[in-house]
View 1 (cartoon, rainbow, N blue to C red):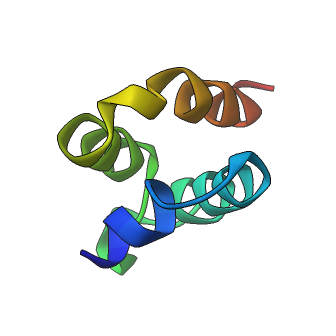
View 2: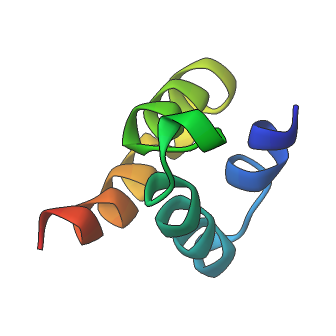
Length: 60
């Protein structure tokens, strides 16, 4: 439920910060881009566009 709170229950600014923070972590520490996408798909698919926009940060 921690990931749900960190990603799904954020406004747009908080969501961007959380996605960059969690997405930049390693899977071993509970993060990574895949973890962000899985949390989004499972708990809050209505935020997919916002999450993907925040994940674009890593493609730069």
